[in-house]
Length: 344
Ligand code: NAP
Ligand code: F7E
Image 1: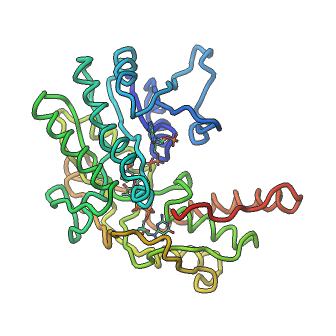
Image 2 (image 1 turned 180 degrees about the vertical axis):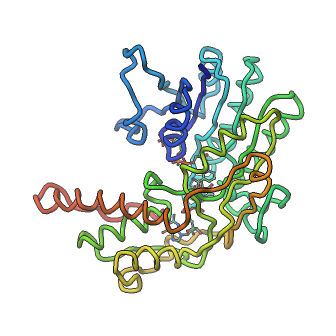
């Protein structure tokens, strides 16, 4: 049985990848942070009590800020494949917490690959690189496009990308960069724009909320489905040699277009409900992302399966279900729908 170790297992991608690897027969180990509230919602449906002899999913406490423990975990688990997905992944938040972001999202990668080097284990490593690294570079972007990062998050990911390439060349380690464009799902964090929109539109539809505040409606993104993208991560680590691959849909849409589509699918007029709040603007923005994934198509045989419209439908259905439950609770006087906490 192959063993995989995932950082970021409690995140959007971690949950889809865990599902995918368990279905392929892997034993899966995941790094989780200790929190005062449960942070395993996205993987709870996959978890079996570890006393169960058939359990194949195991969680370990740790943090990307602490290198010694990462080393101990790799030395004891000795995974065949490592998927390094853990990061402070919110671009807007990276402007509020630049040092922390550089530490977790940048140095965290160095700590992981140093742990591989120092323990001497034989493993394959996937680095969650990002289309944000392209930043101001004109579209379409592919593996040859020169990075022009526009945020502390993007700068930290550029560091990770280069240190992965350096350790590959310097020490002959199997380390691969997947440069993934935005990918979304019903499990997307609620402060990323797509989920923020589908979540609020569903609440507005059920009368739980009146207004959605957004930032820059003109930014354009190449949005795919997270479930499709995690398959590409796995395919990358099945290649004989490590390499770097762009994963994208090859379509771009503006935030305005996404918003308009979601609201109109719910028979709502977005102009009546959406207000622009400059608090959500970023000090520097990435205007247009549009990926060219032809290398992945040719070498990995990977192509996206879920279309833009199907993705939106999937997210709306799931958020309507959540909003219905919220409405039942609200009508019964148990809870209300909270307001905005921070500008994200
Ligand atoms: P996500 O939902 O924000 O998940 C991030 C994960 O990292 C969570 O499990 C989080 O744990 C964990 N984490 C954060 N800080 C940590 C720390 N100090 N120590 C250990 N774990 C820590 O992100 P995602 O959307 O799944 O993305 C996965 C990876 O791909 C990230 O590296 C992201 O930057 C990158 N990426 C994402 C996209 C995209 O569109 N989704 C595109 C390109 C690249 P908690 O649950 O405890 O917070
Ligand atoms: O923003 C604009 C915002 O936060 C998309 C991460 O997974 O993908 C993600 O980063 C666009 C930006 O994602 C709001 O200004 C408008 O132009 O959903 P987002 P992101 O910044 O593209 C990349 C590939 C990653 O690697 C990251 O980890 O939408 N926008 N109004 C807004 N964005 C947010 N969050 N909130 C707004 O109210």
